Amino acid sequence: MTTPPLSIPPTRAGARDRHEPLLEVDNLDITFAGDDGPVHAVRGVSFRLGREKLAIVGESGSGKSTVGRAILRLHPASARITADRCSLQGQELLTLSEREMQKVRGQRISMILQDPKYSLNPVMRVGEQVAEAYLAHHRIGADEARQRAVAMLETVRIRDPRRVYDLYPHEVSGGMGQRIMIAMMMITRPEVIIADEPTSALDVSVRRQVLSTLDGLVSDHGMGLIFISHDLNLVRSFCDRVLVMYAGRVVESIAAADLDRARHPYTQGLLAALPRLDRRQERLPTLQRDPAWLQASSEGVCA
Image (cartoon, rainbow, N blue to C red; front, side, top):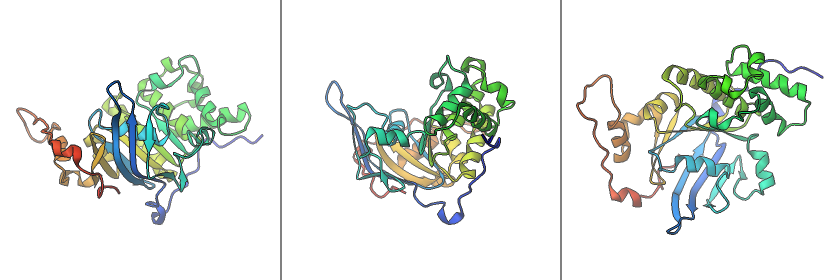
């Protein structure tokens, strides 16, 4: 049996196809059953994702994580999810059978969750969990799966990956645990990664290391990244584009570098509420919400 190399060869996408859509979402609506009637959590969300880093930002309850989970169909069966289009390179995801969807989850679209201590199996060695993610989609032997897992741990900049392979989740730090989660999600070489607040549980220095690792993997392998966050300062420096969500709707789509020139008052309010080091403020402003925003259409802001 041939031993795979301890690295994953890059497959850089050319500039010509960088914005070719990998994921297309048109008019996505999500409704949950509630005690007092249906709850309309997401309304008319539309966007395109190329080989880029796309942020979805907003306050808690704005619907950003709900959108990410809907793409992978991770909501309970009681949820009603409709869309004019929700396709991965032309394959409609909402019409796939559950068996067909299992081939998409983890292999073509992977999801990195917020806190590794809630996502990793506490009674299973971390390396075995990374190898298991590959074995779920490929028929190979256990020895080759171990080699691939060790290679992936090395790719996400974990020192001494063979030693770390045999550790349990409680034996690794938060930053290392998040890199292990990234390794688990990236080992199948998916086309799209959905990262739901992947660094919110980490301190600033470790956060930068993890983001640098994620950025390198996404750009080297020509993947699309949906980065779900509430941190506007973070996405401004890390992502290419930003979708701003309010009450289940996309109210603005803007290049991350242009956030300071945002036009929607909600985005402007979020930015104004951020503390700044270059200007002293006695009190941060409170976001003033306009009821008209609840009726605003998402049309015209998709990108």
